[in-house]
Image (tube, rainbow, N blue to C red; front, side):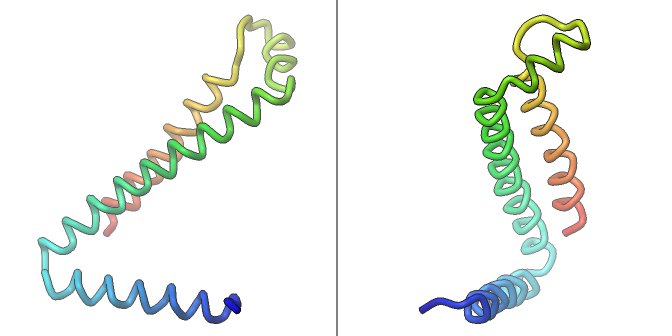
Length: 98
């Protein structure tokens, strides 16, 4: 049975292995790690924005808010794009920090 403690230990071992590999490759390893973090982060940001759009499609909260603010049309796409770009800014900062 997998427990949180074993999962945490496995995750820590994985990150230690990645860190050792990056350190052994030097600057090339850091560049590859930064590219990998960016690509994975971009995929996660896209997935979370799609999830937010689907959640907003199921509710009428955004439509009611848009009506109160005087906007017409569905706000789901605009909100999901805002979430995507906000997360993408975070991903870029993290990948440049690697």
